[in-house]
Length: 301
Image 1 (cartoon, rainbow, N blue to C red):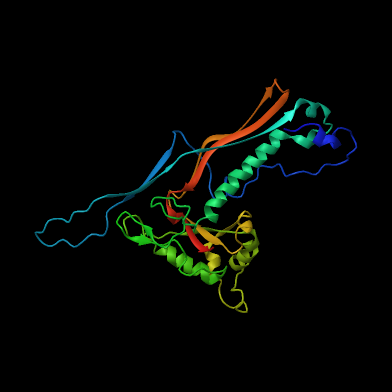
Image 2 (tube, rainbow, N blue to C red; image 1 turned 45 degrees about the vertical axis):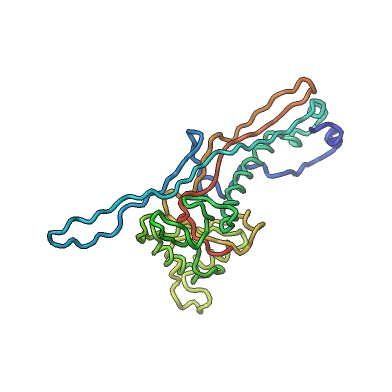
């Protein structure tokens, strides 16, 4: 509980300026133009299912019966919303004694923290992408895995064949690997890379690789082919605190990221008359994860 005594310096008008946290709602993972957007959750949970369809046609001999094929159900994944909440309790005396309205701002501070928590939680999905302790998706394996399981029993990899630092060669290899990615039925279903997701420290390295008309390091003689990929660069500063070498590519795969919101960020306040204190609280309910691992190709950890 916030009381007057710890905030004694706010009880008289002696301070000229107060510097405090950034209270904006800015996010780098969640929202339009970022990695994903939150979808409303109408029921108590969301369940997604992978289905493998038919495969290649065989030749039919004269007078022979038509070959039979089928549809195979694969794995499913359920997403249950989690509740997040925090409050600040302020003694009535502290509110009365405080001379600086910008000092406490309980509701604004809690709201800003909620938006940042949502953002870092989604970033954690990628930070833990190669960690076996964090399975998920249709096959209940880590997001980045060399042997993802298909309904047919075949496997595919969404990990770059050789982990690489930022380079033109790494992007060429990644695009080629996505071009032969297997779909649920085990047949190649080529994917296209959409964006490079990386720590903030890598942003300018990638922009140099992507934006230069000629190849860096070739005396500017060779055509920079990866410039034609028209990839976006999406730096996520949350990565920098976990790994400065990790990066990956998002793809155009369907049913990839799972980001479902059961309750939007909600502000509320009430008075506890018994102790003459005001409560400011913020709550929300959501869940993050992925369904289709093909939405991601891991370039390095």
